[in-house]
Image (spheres, rainbow, N blue to C red):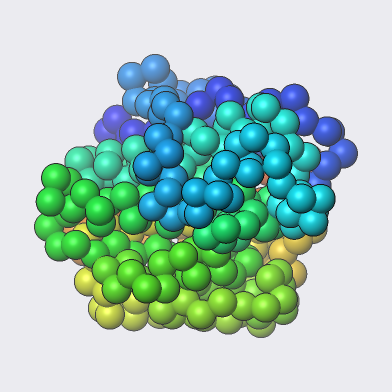
Length: 311
């Protein structure tokens, strides 16, 4: 199967090496998938810069202007957690379009994977926690806004967020959109300190390991699908649930990550629900090891949907 992958060379750029955010992981992830033969010129799509009209579906025009022209206050920059630069601005304006492209490819093909995305802490009018623009909320609203011209058979989408941190920005931006269902499965004692209210919040206790975590994800996924009956699922496959992740606080193994991704993908496949994946959070000084963890969801997507084609 030719699994559609979405990425852009501007996702990684020269960035302070000692910064907590591993900016080079996007480039390393793509290179790792190329080395495996999973990413090829034939199945890799490159998004363009998002139009302001698209970004304004999820964000305040004044905030967008402040970020684009480097007019944020020092307090806003601290909350963003990233040093502003023209390169950061450039990649930030591409990534939401990458998730939107991934969603459209998923509607066409059943599955597509964005080798970035999951910036779920970005709020309507503010950046937060390394997240500048909320690609998940923007893409969901764009699909719903254009539902008459897309392949949505019902005007409903679901965000299934398994990053270790709650998707607070996504929940707040989509709170008044009844056609978008937000489900966040996250560590209870982790960032953000002040949680938002998703349509479904599932808190996982600090130190939870594989079996309990996987059971929780399985139950949450089926319950969320039953409640929302989505035409498309956005899956945030954050790997900061890993037991050695410095920002994680859970005790999930590499095999546990793989089982989680397979569970989500197989459930969507069996129910005939298109799925668009994003990589979400993951932090490690060993950037190559981190890229390999982010590759797991892509590897599993090849396995799960290849098996479907061959069945």
